[in-house]
Image (cartoon, rainbow, N blue to C red):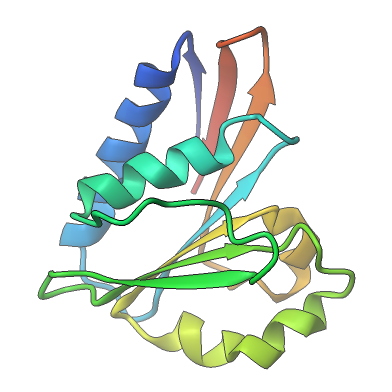
Length: 148
């Protein structure tokens, strides 16, 4: 299922993040919820993650983990225990992410995993994941396509 949204401002991008976060936090699953975020620099991926995390109750300042690659945040939910934020911008080979315990992370139904630059590790993403593509349409306007 594919849905396309035109976000005319940051608030509309945040609303999409809020809706998705609420759906995922309340839906138990057999594996981790994996969301792949694709789009160029400044297209809205990190802003989306920031609002997603805020809705889940994370108070820490969320920045893109470009240099550390992965940041983990503890959640207060009976269904989900961790929000894992991964940035694969600097990854050259998808196998590099395996060293972070990728296979274990995606198997654990208590995890929500948000991957920026997910197209760089497409080969190792689980078959069932949510893909979100961000595209610039203007200064504050974005085309956001959600594929489930």
